[in-house]
Image 1 (tube, rainbow, N blue to C red):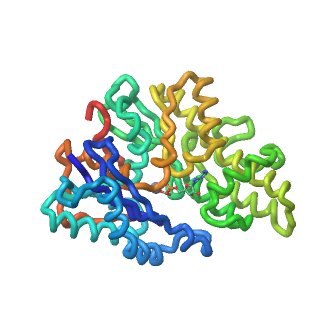
Image 2: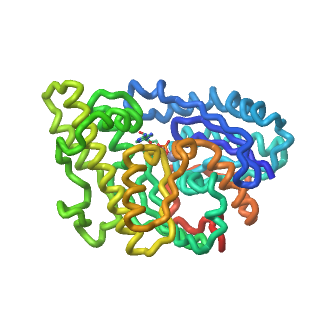
Length: 355
Ligand code: KG4
Ligand code: ZN
C-alpha cells in the first residue's frame, strides 16, 4: 500500500511516498528558513502563503522521484495537528482535494506522534519486539519538549513536558539574542564545538545544583525560560569577540542539553524502560546525541537516535505512520478538522506491537 504524506504544520512544505509504513519511495522538503530568518521566528501567515506556492511543486517532485503517477496512491495522509493553523490549512485543503479527486481515504496525522514514529522508520524490527517496551521517547523540537512513555499496547502517557519554552525555541531565541540568525539550533551546534562549555554556569531549569530534579512533582518536566533570561543578562551591554561568543554558546548549549539528558535517564530508570528514543529537530544536535549515547551506555540502556533526515519536519514520518492508522481501520472523513493543540491525553499509538 502506497501512501502520499503531506506536512505543512510549520515552516517546511514536505511530501513523501512511503510503501507499507517503512519503504521510502520518495521524499522532498521545501524549507522556508530564509523567509522567516529576518524575523527570528516563523510568521504564520507568511508560512501559509509560502506553503500555497510550494505544495504542488513538492508533490510533483516526489512522483517524479518515485517514477509513479497519482493513480499509484492508496491513501493521502496529512499532518492535521498540532501546528500553526494557517499553515496546516494549506496542506489539509490540498490533501482533501487530492483524496476527493482520487476517491482514496484521507488520514489526519498527529505531528507529535509522527516525530516519535520517525525514529523507528529505519528500524522497523524494534516495533515488532514487545520486549523492547515500554519505550521512553524524548521529543525535542522547536514546538515540543516532552517525555512520553509508550507501552507495548500503544498506550502513550505524557510523563513530563516543558512548562514554558521548548528546547529548540530556547536555542532559537538564544541565537536571536546573540545575533546568530534563524534557526539557532544548527548554528549553536556548530559554534559550540570551538567553545569552552564550562566557561559560564547557566541555570538548569527545574534541576537543583546537585543534578537532581528540584520538586518530585516536576521531576520529568522542563523549563527553559530561565536559562534564556540568564543568557540575556550575561551578554547585555557586552561586546564579545569570537572566542568569548563560542564560550557563551557552548556553555548555554550544555545547560540546555544536560537537563534533557539527566531527566531522560531519571525517567528511564524509574519506569524501567527497555528502549530510549530521541526524536524531533533538536535530536540532530551532535552534543546531545553524544551525551545521550554516553549516558545510555553507562546505564546499559538501548538507545534509538532518529536519523537526522527523520528528526526535523518531514513527510516520511507522516506517510509511514498513516499506514499504521490505515491497517487498523483508523480512517478520517473529508470533514477532518485541524487543531493548533496537541491532543491530551495522547491515547494509543497504533505502531506499537500489541496495539
Ligand atoms: O522538528 P522541527 O523541524 O520542527 C518542530 O516541530 O518544531 O524542529 C525544529 C527545531 C528548531 O528549533 C531548530 O533550531 C532545532 O530543531 N534544530 C537543532 C538542530 N537542528 C535543528 N537544534 C540543535 N542542534 C541542531 N543540530
Ligand atoms: Zn516538528
